Image (cartoon, rainbow, N blue to C red; front, side, top):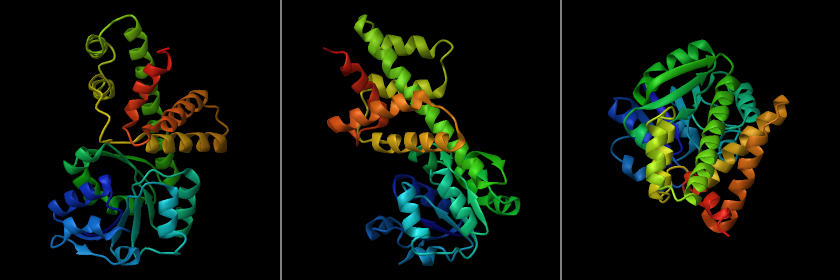
Length: 281
């Protein structure tokens, strides 16, 4: 399949490499050209986003609404074929892109760069049925599971935003729980073992709990700043849909406070470290 990809950050570059290894022909574009160098000789290096948008399918994997808007809306860029936005963006921007691009598929992903490199992401897709089906080959190269949320792109965006909010609640609650047992002189390792050997043996508790026990916050796999962005997206969607999310408000405040103390570039699981220090006095 002839695929363009716009955005070669931590996720985008691993996705691009995986697609090349799976036999797809890629045209890659990144605003800073240095990120494209690892693909020289393996993919066509585009000099502009418009060049990448000329592919049969173009993937966007950018950091936030502002970055996506700057590429697509400010330049009034129109894809030649299907536009698959795999970034996490707001409901409002999703609707705007769907209006502007006839074949627009929202397909945000669950998983970190290591999962992208191995083709083990989970993808939530929504958009015109024929466009989603045409994208199956690239989804299958990147993902272990593909879920179709519906035929309206906003549906996939809503699922992604809601699930990321749930991940934030896990980090917040684990951080609070570690702080509590720590004051009772229970070792973090013992507490994590008990949690993950009983009814909380889910992968997210194991992976986030392990990061907290080891203090493995740098380099960040997903930074606090990006976590805050996701909380803002959840609260924006909640206001739009008339939903009250007091837990999201609490986590947002804690993230803002932790970032103000210089932790913004640490992994968002470092929120546990901040929560543990709050009551240290």
